[in-house]
Amino acid sequence: MKTFLKTASIATIALATSAGLAAAQDDGPLKIGMTFQEMNNPYFVSMQEALNEAAAQLGAEVVVTDAGHDVAKQISDVEDMLQQGIDILLVNPTDSAGIETAVRMAKDAGAIVVAVDANANGPVDSFVGSKNRDAGYQSCKYLAEALGGEGEVAILDGIPVVPILERVEGCKAALEEAEGITLVDTQNGRQDRSVALGVVENMIQSHPDLAGIFSVNDGGAMGALAAIQGSGKDIKLTSVDGAPEAVEAIAKGTAFIETTAQFPRDQVRIGLAMALAKHWGAQVVPAEVPIDVKVVDAENAEGFSW
Image (cartoon, rainbow, N blue to C red; front, side, top):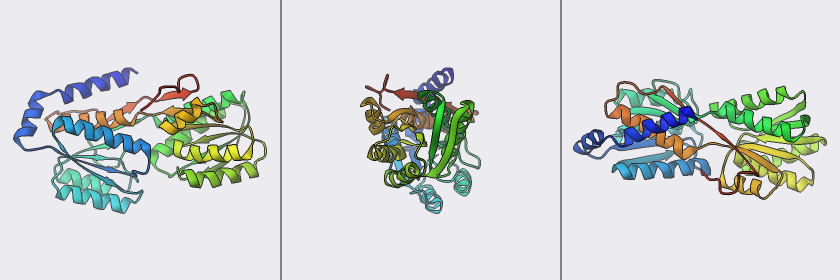
């Protein structure tokens, strides 16, 4: 929490710097580019909304692209944005290593580069992202405790980007602390509702004693929830994200018992603040700004939102 409060203070100072705003106006409208790994996800949609709101307050132009989990397209999108003369590049990489070429191109072109949600290889000026390992750990600790420390569980994995890998790592660490919990299966639901539905149906058929499932994101969790409900079995489900649909399912008292919420709007606001500070002449900005996560369950789901 101290880290978050300190970060929020930095963001407030950066956004309120009148000298920086005056300089930006003298040079013409600030141009901000953001490339997303995907936009078929409420998480990133809310992030874009927050970016647009902040840019409107600054009088800045925004260029947004959707890589669709295709790193070649993401690199091409960055090339296009650089040709349009962006001053700031916010990059949400679909492949942390693969995007390095685009990061270097942007730096060579004189743009400020900040990675958001997932870090990128190369000379980024700052990285702002959730504590993903902590999120996976908290969700799986919650699951183990809900099962009384005993039973078979499975992991519904996703696309192997760094945040997902970290969530799985944290989950496994929590499960290992519960001696009576056995991890019997890990399968890839690709963070997609329809894919996850079929994957979890197979999981349940293959493991008749399955008692719990952890999903790496809420999109996959909603498919898992449908499979659990269709099976008629008592299987508990936890996840990471804090998406509105997931929070609603938790509030209703379904098999979906917990999601560890992230804060996408705060991530992009703070990421933009780091970039603005650098653009306006800051010699040093934090190399990394970790954003806290929050457990959301039946006790606090009512009224929670990103």
